[in-house]
Length: 277
Image: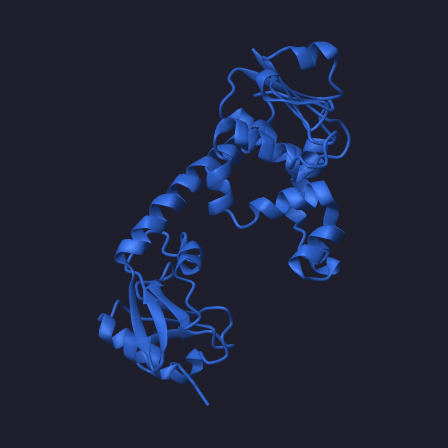
């Protein structure tokens, strides 16, 4: 039997995610929300997370509060399990989550170049509820509904990293780049979760001339044309009366065709949506 000890009181994303990941690799295991004892810190079958003032992976102690140079406990656990490097590459939120936990919202907002109120306004009520639910527990076992949710979350994070890596390589080999006037669009024919890793692929290309993606739609049987980066030169309202077009958003940032028309036809529609002075 393994044990996980995590701090009592208010739960945060850091300890919640660290426990979620550990639930995918430890079985059987129980989680206790309390201060650790010296015996807990000395027992390698007891994982002490975000509490205990000790970072010692050999004894499975993962606190960062005693050393300002350490990242959050979730990052320490991910490093221990061999997932940290991939998470840094695959998840845009991963690095900033640690910064929020270690340095706080004001320093994080300064680093991101935004007002702190933006961070607070972007907080999710779903996060708030789930964390408060975890906060109210003294212990977590397989009999608690939250146990299954957290374990599934941890498993999904690991699986998603692998899927994103595979998809990125597929996008690199299969995606087509086409000209739209003197700009560019990317075309992917991958129909299964077509947006997966698209942000990573665009970062890889690092081409400011790419202003649009064209992919199979996840709602309907046609193509989706999407404006990238809210670029003002793209406005799909210019093609909303075309008989091949099924939907154009009222703000013009996205359009969908009725069917998977030939690529050259959807490129013509995309080209008609480019406005340049």
